[in-house]
Length: 64
Image (tube, rainbow, N blue to C red):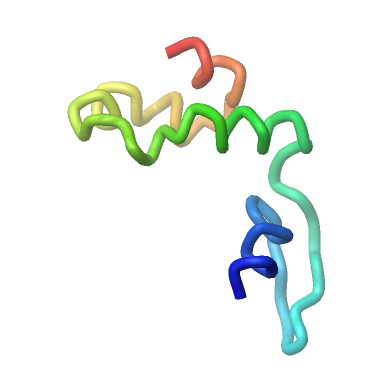
């Protein structure tokens, strides 16, 4: 299952067996998200920057 989850990170899928609907981010943006690991940030930093996190601007998120 881990291999499958690595293949579909940030991908919208549906069905059984699963079928890719579309990617949410470019490959470069996915690499950035996995590199910065915002989900491991201190909760105060997450709350302070929630608008940016929810805004899907990966480059702006990387600047934090």
